[in-house]
Every structure is written in structure tokens, then in C-alpha cells.
Image (tube, rainbow over all chains, first blue to last red):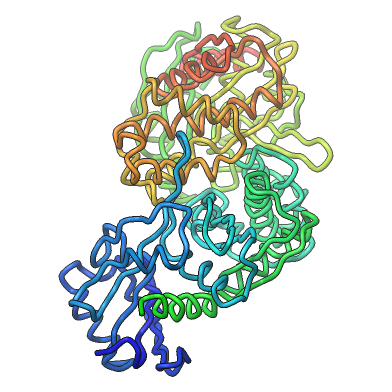
Amino acid sequence: MRWSEGFIAVDWGTTNRRGYALDASGRLIAETEDDKGILSVPKECFPEAVAELRAALGNKPLLMGGMIGSNRGWREAPYVPAPAGLRDLAGHLQWIEGENAAIVPGVSWEEGESADVMRGEEMQILGAAAAGLIPQDAVVCHPGTHNKWIRLEGGRIIRFKTVMTGELFNLLREHSILADLLWEPAAPNAAFARGVERGLAEDCLTADLFSVRARVLLGKMPRQDAASYTSGLVIGTDVRTGLKSMAAEEVVVMGRPELTSLFAAALDVAGRKSRVIDGEEAFLAGAKHLVEALS
Amino acid sequence: MRWSEGFIAVDWGTTNRRGYALDASGRLIAETEDDKGILSVPKECFPEAVAELRAALGNKPLLMGGMIGSNRGWREAPYVPAPAGLRDLAGHLQWIEGENAAIVPGVSWEEGESADVMRGEEMQILGAAAAGLIPQDAVVCHPGTHNKWIRLEGGRIIRFKTVMTGELFNLLREHSILADLLWEPAAPNAAFARGVERGLAEDCLTADLFSVRARVLLGKMPRQDAASYTSGLVIGTDVRTGLKSMAAEEVVVMGRPELTSLFAAALDVAGRKSRVIDGEEAFLAGAKHLVEALS
């Protein structure tokens, strides 16, 4: 197998994986998606899970990013400390099967007592910068289970901050006393904007969350507003935290469209411009430029 | 059945219930506890569940407080709006079985867009004030699944604020990415104090929570410190929120000993004095004084 003749890029997460076949010029020619995230694959079954991908996408070399490189994945790829660019990732790939498969490492950041880690977002962000989709110097907000705020300088990740916004919202929707109020999908409507304003202004999220229940019980908030308001509350809190950590007039919002639209709306409420970049496009750019950096 | 000859007081919550038999002078003569919280009793089975209590504690009138009066309980007892004292509760009991059983209402608070509700804590707080266990004017912190901060004036609840601290910590421990770090019981040790300091000082709880994982992964925090540190983080955030909402030099901390000790330790870090009151003793005082107010 030769990388220059095309390869398979895999975004291999905790609960899902997406595989893409790229031709010699880096053009997407086929793709597949399933629910074989790392948690559903026993350690010894990764070779088999990879064989399935090759059966679907062609017998090519494999570049894998995301949780596949965590201690729960196929092979641990230790974090590369920030500042980190695409060449730093390329220099620290975790090679498997000789030179036919590689796992992209995550990025870590430490300063004094503080520390943070990412695994998966780095390929999108550095890929978007390498492909010119975003400036070399930028603040990027990457919504997801663990939302990241990233400071990019000269096309490298300088520092970043993770906020557990997506996971918190999912915990609330699935397991909390607010669960029966949060079944509707959140939308960037007027209730969402009110939640964002509250999240931006105040610093008692855990009190504001309970007040959603109280206000619905006492008839002060329509039940159908609760999901959007609560989403606005946690996202507004997130945006306040991110902008406090890294000041920016314009923020790049990168990720899945259903999440980037909510964060772009929240940034608008916060008086900031935003530029939305599709995470999948950025991932493919990252894979292509990373493989180019290998040769 | 005559109330003046003694009665049964029941603290009937979501997952547990505690029953106490009091004699004519209000002295505790027997008690029972089981897991028949309201969520495990179908609506039509409450008479049977009450019969069990009488079989264990004597055939006496029944005074019930807590979630038994919620829309998911035996019979809904609408909230009494603050300011509310023990006589207000006594005047709005929800009577069942003629005059042989009564449910104590919860308390609500509204101001502008803000709203809050409590159900269960009011009997403890007002009981402690009526019995002279705490001053008539006080700030009370009542830890639990939904922690309450209460301003008491003239022995009445003037206003209060709920913080979802206990529920958040349980969600994190049971369902989150931090779950495997939080299995140890939290203790008011040095790691706890560091978490409290961080929670008191900063306002990005959802970012600080993720950093626990990052710091353990990168070897900056011993794994065995994670539970106490995280507990300190959420409790410190809670104390900051409570003290911001109602300034106090001394705070009464009321509830179960395993929780009050953590909150008292956090208040100490915040430079506040605290006085710990056992919640069960306060509940019994509330029941006794409430029944006295009936005659």
C-alpha cells in the first residue's frame, strides 16, 4: 500500500466512526458511517473493525483521528503538548501495521496548575488553517460533548479551554429532574436568546438550571420554551467562559451544523461575529494536509 | 383518632420515607425508615403504604411533609408563597381521610422573572426556628439533592435560592466522563479545600469540571484526590452563589450530617462561621410545632 496513491481517513469517536476514502489528489471518493465507536469494539477486535472499513472503502493505508488514540482505543497515541501544528502531529503519529496505518495524537496544554486535553478536534482545526478555510491567527469554538475554545497563532494551537457543555446538557436531558422538560429539540429562537443572555450575565448556572423547573411549575415559563431556554443557558455560560479566556471580536465556529448554528446564534447575542465552518470538511482538509506533511 | 393524643410524622421524599411516632407531649417514641419514596408507590397504593406506617408506628393521625405533596405524590398540596411561617403552612394543609391525615404544603417564591420552589425543607427550617434551635433571623443553607439557601426573618421564610449541587454531583458520579474518578467518598480534606477555593473564586464550573479529568490524565492531580476536589468545586460554587444571593457572616447549615460537614468546611474556607443543625431533629420540631398550631 502506498499513501501517495490515496488513503482512508477515519474520524473514530467514542460512539461513532466515519470513514472516508480519498484519491491520490486528496479528493473524497467514498464514505461510510456506523456506530462502531471505540466503546463498542473490544481491544482485540480493532484489526477486524479496520478490515471492515477497508472492505467498504478499498484496501488503502489508514489515517485515524479521535478517541481511537486514547487509552481505551486501539493503541494509545500520547498527547503532543501545545503549541502544536500539523507537522507536530505528523511527527508523532502512532504507527500500526508497519507503515500502513497511523493514529493521530491528541493535543495537551499545561500552565501552572491548569491543564487541558483534546483528541479529535486538532485535525479539524489545523486542517482548516492549513487549507486556508480559516485565518492562521484565530479563536475557534468547537462545540461538541466537550466544547473547545482554541487560540490559533501562526496556524498552530497555542492554548485551549474545554467546557463540558454538551455532556452537561445530555446529562440533564437524560437523567435529571429537568429531563421531562428537555425532550424537545433546542432551537435558536427567542427563548434560546433569553437563556443565552442569562448565561452571559450571571455566574450561577446550577441555580439557574433549577429555576427552569420552578418557573414552569409556577406558570412563569411555557413548558415548550424550557429546552431552548436551557440550551441557551448552558451555551451562554459556555460563550462567557470562552470569551473570558480568549478575547475575540470574531470567532470561528467549527463542528456539526446542528451545534454550530446554536453557538453562532449565542455569539450574535454576545455581540460577536462568527464564521461557521463545517467540521467534516475541516477534518478531510486536515487528513489531506497531514498526509502531505509525511512525504 | 385525636391529634392531641400523639401522631405520626412522615418525611416522605422521592426515594425514601421516614416515619416517627410522637406521644402526646411531642416526644419521639418509635421510628421507621424504608425505600418507599413516592416514585415507588403507584398513586392508588398510598392508602396501603400509609396503613403499613400505622401498622409499624400505631393507629394515629398522620402529618406528612416532602414530595408526598407534589403532583407525583398522594395528593397535591399547592405551594404557599413566601413570606411563609409555620402558621401559614398549618393554614394550608391538604387534608385526607377527614381529619386523620394531612400533607404539609411546600413554599414558593417569585420576584419578577425569578421563581423558586421547595418541598420538605420548610418543615425543618421553620421547626428549628419555632423550637429556638436557630435564631428567628438567619441565613440557612440546607444541602441535599437540591441545595437551598434561605433567608429567615421573624421566624418566616422570606426568600430562598435553590442550587442543583447534589444532583449535579450525582449525575457526574453516575453517568459522566468523570464517573470513574468519583467513586471514592468525598471528604473535607486538603483536596476538598482546594476545590472550594477554586469554586469560590471562579465562575466556569463546567470548564473546571473537565479540567479534573485533564489534570489526572496528565499526572498533575493524584487520582485519589479527584472526588474530594470535585466535591469542593461544586460546593464552593454553591457557597459563592448562596453568599452572593444572601450576605451572611454566620450561616446555619441544616440537613444530614454527611452533607452538613462538607458545607461547614466550605463555609470555613469562605471565612464564614457556621452552626450545624441536624435535619431530623429540626423536622421533628417542625412537626410538633405545626400540630400545636392546629389547636
